[in-house]
Image (cartoon, rainbow, N blue to C red; front, side, top):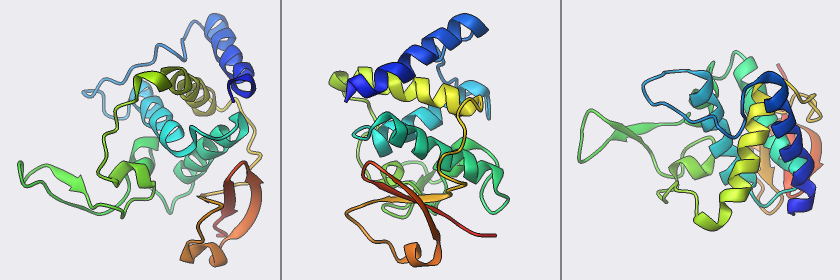
Length: 180
């Protein structure tokens, strides 16, 4: 799988040298609401958890869906808000801290109840996800998903799929556009 991701990784490194900004050095700072760094971290996390086993084009496709949602007025206006969208409930430890309702989020990894820590053995894949996030966030990939706002794995059939327009299949993901 890495041989397919090497060109993306190399492009991000070269882009960093040219622009002076590193795709790999972008760290989120929790105090910076909607900062570029935080938005790219949210996007990289989503790419990793949703498409870490997909070809590079699949990782980019997942990121493009988030970008397309940010651009669509029916969804929240930031990458982090799109990724974290879903119902919440008060935490039993801190009633004023809302936590996502399990299995009810737009992106399943975000509210599956499992740890979101990247395993040490997957750091290279996560770095590739960060490189893809950097390039997608900066608009450096054309939208080969044809405006897709939804996708799902090929081994499930969500109820919403029949109401959306199928645009492309990449790896194990089937992409759809929600017509306006």
